[in-house]
Structures are given as C-alpha cells and as structure tokens.
Image (tube, rainbow, N blue to C red):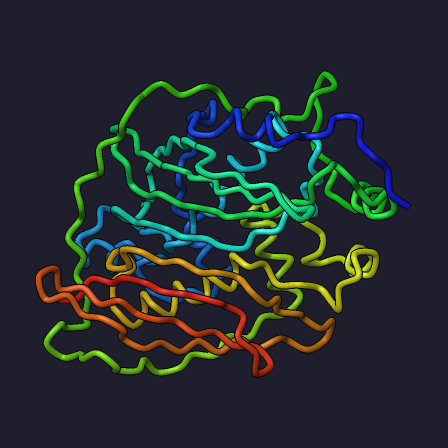
Length: 347
C-alpha cells in the first residue's frame, strides 16, 4: 500500500534552488580519533591516517583523512537540502548514482570545515528526478580544501510505500530529544551563503613513492581484494552517519524487494580510495577521484562479500607529473562501477 504525501515536491521547487548556495549553520571539526575510526571502517591501512609521525614525514601537519572522509559532511548537507526544501521525497529511497571528488589538499586533524552546498543540476523525467549536488568544503582560513559532486535520483510525485515507512520508523535509532526538538537537526541546518568565490587552499606538496619515470601508459596495478561483512556495514553506517536501513535490515530489504542487504556505495568507493593511496604512497597525492555506481554489492548474513580492485594507467601528463588511472571493481564476477577514474600525483 502506498500513500500520497501532502507536501509534493515539484520541478518548480527544485528549479528555484538551482545555483543558490547554502551553507551549514555550524562548522565540522575534524578530529584525530574520527580519522582513525573512519580509516578503520573503510579498511584503509595507510599509516598517515593513524600515525602522526608518518603523516608529518609526508609533509602534513597532522593525521590526514582518507579521500572519501568528506562523505560524512556531504551526507549531512544533502539531508538538510531534502529535509528543509524538498520534504516530499522519501530519503530512504533516494539513490546515489555517482560521486566525484576534487581534493585540493587532504583534510587533517584540527581542521574546522565549513560546508557550502549548491544544487548544480536538476532533471525530471520518466517518474524519477535527478539531482547533482555540489559541496564545497573550506577550512578555518576560508580556503577551499575539497569539492564533491553527488548525483542522486529520487522517485518523483512524493509516493511513499507505507509499509516501508512504518518499518523504517520502527527500527531507526531513537534521536535524542530536548524540548520536543531533535538535537542536531534543529541546531545544524542550512542558511543562505553570500561569501562569494572561494580561493583554493595552498597545496601541500604530496610526497608520493611512485615515480613518474617508473610507470608507463598501460601499466596495471596489482589487484586488491577486500572482504566486507555485515559488521562492516553496521560499523560504516555508524561512523559515516548513513542511517539507511537497506544496509543492515533484512526486514526493510525484503519490503523493498531487494535480493539482500546492500553495501554502501560510498564504502565501496572508499575501499578504492585506499587502494589508490596505498599504490601512490601518499593519500594527499590523490587529486581527483570519481565513481559511477551501477551494481549493488549484496552481503550475506554469515559470509562476507568480496570486492576486487584493479587499475590501469590510462594517461600520463609529463608537465604536471600526474597519472590518470582507470579503476575496476568486481563482486561475484560482475563490475560494480560503470566508470571509475582517478588522477594521482607522481614523484
């Protein structure tokens, strides 16, 4: 059974938001232990995420965050967009289809990050609405450190399955409340942003171990296989703040008609980020990274799923000493990324 919500979002509402920048009303302080926690959750073993001495030896001022760490901030910003301006959409059924990241410098412990979010593109058609949300993240000096573009699709018309809605309501974590308002969502919200253009942060010169002279177009990167169990999904959901129960609840999965519990797309992207930074030798050397999600990774209750990552050098730019890498990820013999590329700095 489904119900029609009273507040039905229209193309006009979304179109009116196009190009209008908003920012989170509070900043996000990047903590040392949160970096370590996130790196463990995404099985990124580079020591620059754990050991300050290693990070400083690479020229960083403190522990550096994995390249997809900002999924936490992007998730907060995007939820605010839908909750404040487009409440007719069922967030549990908003599907992320693509993510692209431009890293001007890696986030590090002690950063106080301001998030600015803009609806860059909107398209309605065939019963689905498509959104491209851009998130610009600047540090305490006002300098831009990372930009992310998230493409998501949502069912148009505000139709929500009542059975799924009731199941989700019954199993989600109880939010702490005070005076009838949720702590967190009532404090952190979007406000109009009028700061204008952001200047890019001064780059920290990465210190990659991989040398430009030692690689060639067509070179293949050794494969890495990652195991992901139900416990990994629950842990990542808590660490990242992605509370969608399709990643851990068999009840909701059955109601949604899915084959099994589904791994987070951003978790599979994060595994690839660790694969890239380990190969190049410095997490700060991953300049750009983008993934199109095409096939879900289903995770059985008692058996971990396996995702295998491989890469090949597609292009080399001698003037910038960078390499463009095509990434491939497979689970059960099927590709889970439609397109995945990265640009990394070489020594």
